[in-house]
Image 1 (tube, helix red, strand yellow):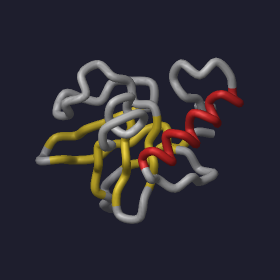
Image 2: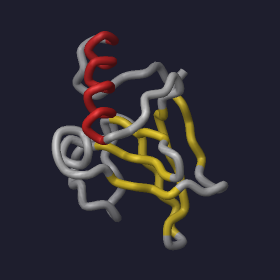
Image 3: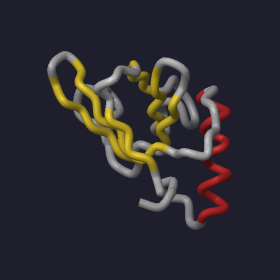
Image 4: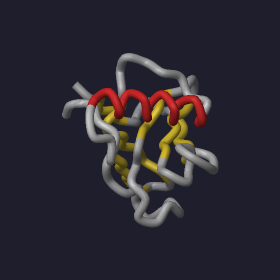
Length: 104
């Protein structure tokens, strides 16, 4: 999958929005961008993907995942009201079983 940000009309706009989200979420900007994240939480397999809604255990409603950032010991998942424009991102702890798929 090629890098994108939902609702960004072109690559330049997607990069601009990505940088702004990273700044607001206090997340590092890296060359490798996360497209999809899969992890086990309380015995439940959870998957999130840029451009899709977070699964039901998270109170984000139908908001789309705009970006996923890899930080030191956790991942920050950003939707419009959770880490992108207001609020705090959804935090997921890093562990060896977490599967990360990067944009190409």
